[in-house]
Length: 281
Length: 318
Image (tube, rainbow over all chains, first blue to last red; front, side):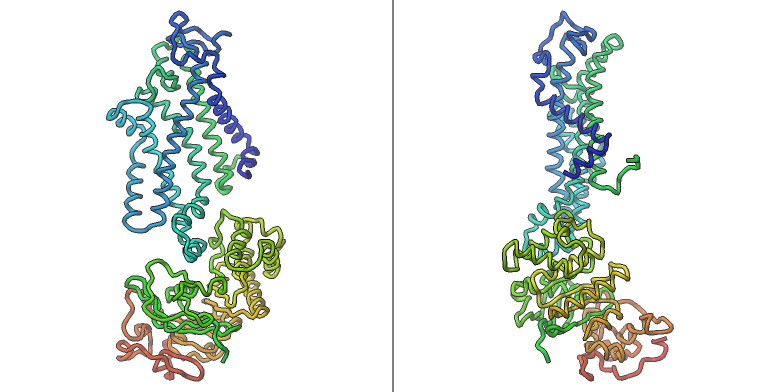
């Protein structure tokens, strides 16, 4: 609650929060908000590449589909992909970090060295490689993104666990016979929760951007799904005449990624006042 | 002599190959105060952990007993002493979990160990907050640990140590993390509380000033063994064990030229045979490296050195 109040006091973070909330609302009610909900998959070749007008505010694409509808329908996919990827990364990274931070010896060393190896692999390269190995598609892209994003959570949780492992309240809990799982999940993990939340928020934006990039490169979402990156990619052949075709999906990517990043920055400031940027508020 | 509330009898603790404590005995009489001094690494913290029943994982106790109220704490995992020994830690910063309210964390201890309803516990805690002179005792219940200053947090922890009405208060250098003025306040507070409640105090410290003003008797540890123990005044005025003598000579209040003790405390994995102080001792001779010195009684104190009557060479004290 105090975090929310903190964000509302920060106009930039509030703007980010509003962008994210707007995207969530659009995603939830996409089929009702889109003027032509069937245009996700149906083509109308007679009305291809129309410029923005009252009938089609964002214009139409090379198959005559309403771009506004496709941008709205694509919001759901973008958010779902980001949530699934970040969720999977947390599900892998947090237990690894807790375990490696709590234990000492070969197990902790192995876990953290594996983490380092994954951190060292560039996300895009791994995603492209996986796309070639497995069938290219949104599922492969998600696996690749989750595989490269969990080390960030593992590192964060590891550092916090190591810091608190020697704390007296942890010794006291162990002294009265609390199970390590209880100590870690109920007493240590809440200390790392703000850092995880910040990481996750920024990760959402990052994942949306990378997923769009993979769609653009042809190893992410496959046609005809209304993926923003894919739409920008399809639009390349019709430039510069059909300027509206790549512009609106591109703007959608920009705004949503911007929203998550601004919100993430605001959350970080709320979580740790010492890191507050000198923005004069 | 008053029956001791806590008595540690020939306690030895090992962690792997490291012999942390060896044959350590001490006693805290009911309502009395005992200070434990020694250099870093001499086993003070392990001794406290054994008394509190929170020895680190992997620690073994090959011998000895920790008797509290006549029962061996080590044998029953501390169950009989739970709630009856209060602990004031050295570091007031990470002793409470930052993500929970300070009051709730102390109330949880009381729910486990103290009789009465939640309402009783709250009332008693507010009273304790007042007794440790925490500002705004009622508002303090709802605050998180980071909202208190260092000195206030130490007061908070003293309140936590007292929350189950213990018979013994164990304090691990409770003032080293605080600035000098706060140190004095905390010490005065501890002394006052102990006197008012008839508490026994076991005090670990580096500070001979604290020792002299707060503790009736003292036990000097060196490398996991007791070097000397006895009434504080006697030990400070006329230290007999060579280690105690040299340690006191290191203290700036007591010597014009600041002395030092050559060498360092041996690692717990590489303790020398015989007397553990002999490599650094100016009185050492052949048999010191062979035989473990037996504690001798000398005018009301115990000294683990057969040559305690000899004068130290001048160079050693200069």
